[in-house]
Image (cartoon, rainbow, N blue to C red; front, side, top):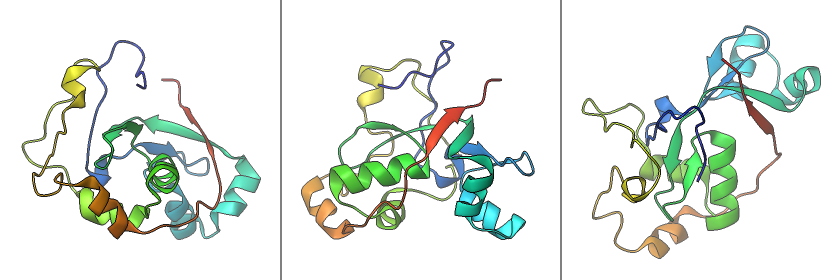
Length: 157
């Protein structure tokens, strides 16, 4: 299981708005979907951004997610989730996000577990209808290719 370091409890979420954030090396702000930010606000593609600044992305906010198919704990960012779904489940990120993730945090958000172990193994937003047979869910998500890999590092506070 991933370690958050410093003895701080890991933050878990199924909410897209709470995904890990990456620092833009142009404007120094942090975004969950950096390629879209670069395209929409700086008017050039992400391949161009990587040529200028390298493949290493600076992680500014760390959140974790428990895969709703296999219950594996993952860092909750698009590249990590996309690679996990493609390699382990042959699934599409968009279909997984639509089926399993919410856009906003619920008002009664569940606090993060204080330690990794038995308490972290429970499915925090379990819907009995969704957890009946994971093999049926995987088939409906399809498959896709991962276009490139990135190195992600956490920004030291």
